[in-house]
Amino acid sequence: MILQPVVNIAEICARKGVENVVLSPGSRCAPLTIAFARHPKLNVKTVSDERAAAFIALGMALTTGKPTVLICTSGTAALNYAPAVAEAFFQQVPLLILTADRPPEWIDQLDGQTIRQQNVYGQHIKHSYTFPVDFSHKDSTWFSERMVSEALNETMAFPTGPVHINIPLREPFYPAPGEEITFDAGVKIIEEEQPTYSLSSTQLAQLQQKISNYSRILVVAGQQNHTHEIQAALQQFASESGAVILGDLISNIHTLDETIRHQDAILACPDPEKLATLQPDMLITFGKSVISKALKLYLRKYKPKAHWHIQPAGQVADTFQALTRIIRCSPEAFFTSIKATSDTNYSSAWSGIENKATDFLKHYTSDAAFSELTVVARIFATLPIDSNLHLANSMAVRYANIIGLESSKNVEVYANRGTSGIDGSTSTAVGCALTSNKITTLLTGDMAFFYDRNGLWHNYMPHNLRIVILNNHAGGIFRLIDGPKQQPELEEFFETRQALDAANTAKDFGMKYSSCATLEELSQILPSFFAADAGAGILEIFTDSKANAAAFANYKQALLKAL
Image 1 (cartoon, one colour):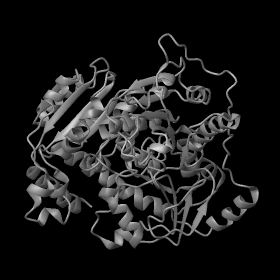
Image 2 (cartoon, helix red, strand yellow):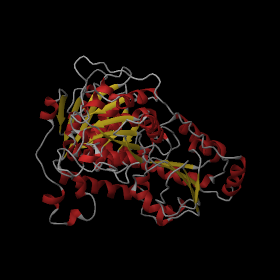
Image 3 (cartoon, one colour):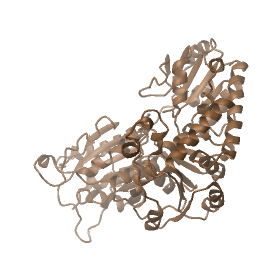
Image 4 (cartoon, helix red, strand yellow):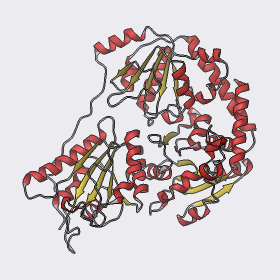
């Protein structure tokens, strides 16, 4: 017989708004599996590879904004969750991780599938709990129910993130044949009201007085999901203040017409006098990580007099080595409350060079020969309106940030930039596609794609998933960055050359497959590939690593002349 407090974990999750559960098969976790699988209000999927399962759950939570529950058996299964847990921690994605475990008396006793699971995720978790193993005292049930509510509340408390409950379980794991599983209607639930994170009148007056001392205001948005509230607040602040608004593609502010979106190109300008005209005296930041290395290096060199970071709670990074003030409120509250006036000459300096960069990129990618950069430009021009775009790490996200997206596309952008690993890019995109009715495109490289093929190994292939693979048969980024490209070990030990293609992968998982190696072939394939009724598909674009490196060098030389 399965313990009722274990069964009630599923009920508490459902009552507190959990919708999606991803579990991986195992025996020790059978009581959890059965309880969640039989709950009528939970959408439960099974994915055998725990690493892929965790990233799929991450993608679901990213898309829905609600906690996704992960369930696995004891032993190394829990360790395989670790990459996605770390990504969720730094990207602030709500996950509730439930790991089945041996009871405490069997730890370190050479019993099968047994490791030291308490606090297994170390410092990459918001909180770790240990579920009671004995329920002979009534307070144990109260404790277990309270724990699950607290854990779910913690996943959604700012900054949102992953929370772990380790659950030691003794046999029997399975109900007797015909035994019914019931969920307690009177299970204890603790709800938590989220604060509004607004500014007091005193704080507002003080900040208003301070910001009036600055006339060259630059707002930099870090990674964040798209929200209408932030878009509207930024739109209001930009139009009223004249401040310059800048963000990487993963900041999801590219839908604002005023956004400076080509900072990578702009800051390649070789003229120090022009660069000096872009220096802010007031820098305002919000959100998480920034992709653009050029922007980070620029602001570390051309420091503002003041740097304010807007964040309701949690640790704040001093990314630009210029931080002077942390303001504890929501970005929406700040940008709709604060009044400022930025010098029109300052905004004109940014908009002027932005227009040059935009025109250059448009003409260059239209006329240049076949390479990964021109391929990405063609793909972005064809992306469906109102769709999702996932960017794998390494060169895919960098190419995307260089090219940028037009505001009219209204594309929501995601990338695993919490830890910036390639390990779960495909799985995360799958999780997004499973919880969205929009076409969801993954732009990835061959190394990231083949590393994470198990993200497709399950029975839930989403019809709206489109995967575009830039296959140069190597880790092409190492030819484009200083250091490895000068080393004799480049080809064997950095690039990891391989001869794989994705045709068999597409066949294995029932996906449509197409490939090309020229811009003409690409133009012919893209319309049908992105058609709403095309079904899940892989488009593999074959390029040459050495040719890509030469083409990228040509791009940088042409850019220097244009600016």
